[in-house]
Length: 465
Image (cartoon, rainbow, N blue to C red; front, side, top):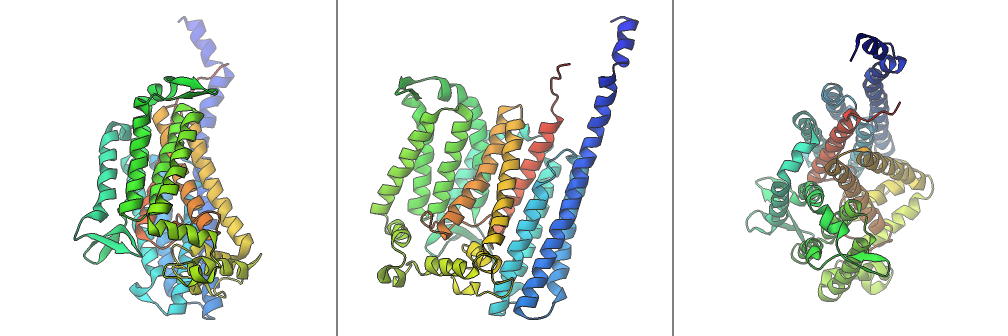
C-alpha cells in the first residue's frame, strides 16, 4: 500500500468515528443496567415493606438488612460485568433481580402467617440460597470468558446430565417428597439435581446438534411436502423421548420429563429448520401422554384433576384436585388489582410458596400484577432469543435459544398447570418459587446468557461501505 493510500484510509471519516462510538457502547450498556438495578432493588424493598405493613402492621428491619446484603451481591455482579463482560445485555440482570425479590417477599408473607422466623423461615432460606446462586453466577461470569469453551466438553456435559438425573434413584441419598423421587439429601441439605441437569442437557444438545446438523436436516425422503428423516437419524429423538419417559415412570416427575423432551425438540428444530421433526416430536408427546395416563395411576390422577376438578369425588380424593381448586379460588379472590401484599390468604392453597406461588401472587397482586410478572418473563426470554439469533456461531445460537426456551417452557408448564390450561406437573416457577436448586440453576442461566451476549457484541462484523 502506498503512502497516499494510507493517508486516504486515515482521513476517511467513518474509520475515525466508528471506533469512538464502539468505545462508548459498553459504558452506556452498564450505566443502563445500573439504573435498572437501582429501580429493581427499590421495588423489592417496597414489596417487603408492603408485606409487613399489610400482615403485621409495622416494619421489621431485620429482613430488610438481609435484602441489603443481597443487593450488595447483585451490584457486585454488575461491577464484575463492567470488567469481564462490558457489552453484556443490560436487561437480564435487573429482570432476574426483581423477580427473585418479589418471590422472596411473597414467601416471607406466607411465613408470617405460620409465624416462621429465623432459619425456620422459608423466606430467610430463600435469601441465603439467592446469595449462593448469585455467587455461582459471578463465578461463571469470571471463569467462562468465551462460551465456545463449553463446546469442547459436549459429551462430558451429556454424561453429567445423565448422572444428575440418576442420583435421586440411588439408595441412601435419594429422597421422595410428595410422591416424586427427584431430591437427594446429604446431611441437613437437600438438593434437586435435575435443575442442574437441564443446564448440562442444553449444552450437550447444542454441541451434539452442531456436529450432526447436516445429516439431520438434509438427508431423507420427501412425503406430503415434508422431508422425513431416515430411520437411523430418528435415534437421537427416540433416546431423548425414552429418557423423558424414564423420568416420568421411575421418578414420577412429569414436569422434568416434559421439559427435557421439549427442550431437545425446539433445539432440534432451530438447528435443522425441519417441520417434520416438530410433527414427529408432537406425535411422541401425545403418544407418551396417552400411554402414561393409561398405565401410570399418578399421571391418570393428574388428568382427572385437570378435566373434572370440581367433582366431589376428585376434589376429596387423596392427591385430588383440592390444591388446584383452591389455587383457582385464590386467583378469583385477587380479581383485577388484588387484595394487596400481606392482605390475602394465600396459605390456604397447599405449597403456596413453591409450586403455587403464582396463585399466591395472583391473589395479592391481582391480574394486573401477574401480567406485569409475565411481561418480565416475556422480556427475559425475548432478550435471550435475540442474543441467540444475533450470534454468528451455531453453538452459541443453539445454546442461547435452548437456555431461553428452558425458562419459557418452564413458565408455561407451571403457569398453565396453575391456571388449568394444562395438567399440573409440579415444576417450580423460575426465580419466584421457594427452592435453592432452582434458584442456582436459573441464575447460572442468567450468567451464561450474559456471557453469550457479550461475546456476540464483541464478534467482528463485515461492514459494507
